[in-house]
Image 1 (cartoon, rainbow, N blue to C red):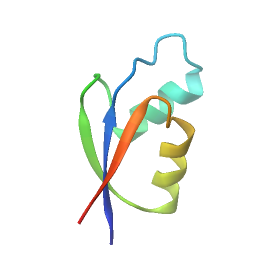
Image 2 (cartoon, rainbow, N blue to C red):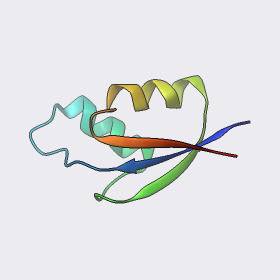
Image 3 (cartoon, helix red, strand yellow):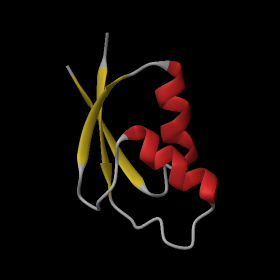
Length: 60
């Protein structure tokens, strides 16, 4: 299964609670933090909701 690296690049201050919870469920707390996830549909959906706060790159 493909993997993706998700990096938090912007703060979640003054963002809706829903977006803050999505970042928390992805495992992102601090700016610059990188987490790796399987590229499942649920994870890709969460990343799409907070795409303005994170950067994504595919890994092998």
